Image (cartoon, rainbow, N blue to C red; front, side, top):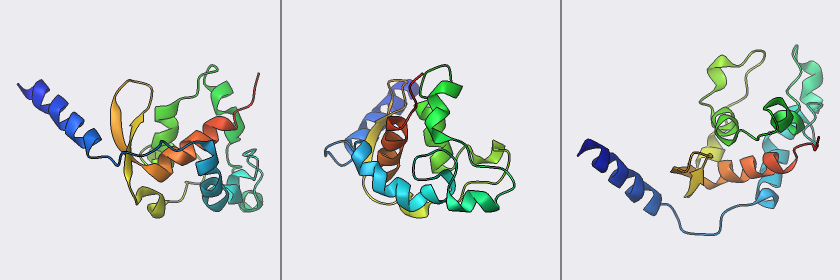
Length: 136
């Protein structure tokens, strides 16, 4: 009964998401430029203007997939940009992006087949970061 109730709640939550076209990389590029490029650089290489003042250089975002066995870890990346995984980060912390958490929700599948209501802007940003991954 409990499992059925949880499943039903998940279905209702996803159904409550705004039904609209899913964001693509082009939707996340402007968000990236506005929120990430200062540290991670225009190309995601970790060479933004703010990086020069940091004691530890920001990660090269184009190598996330390479660092993870040629698999882009959607759940891990989402947890980093939405703030849930920041407590275990070494070096300077990422800022909180409150505005990215606002707006309509869309269903997001981090790769486990479970649709989770997630702010559209966060999904768009993740899609852009996934699109700039280096080829091996």
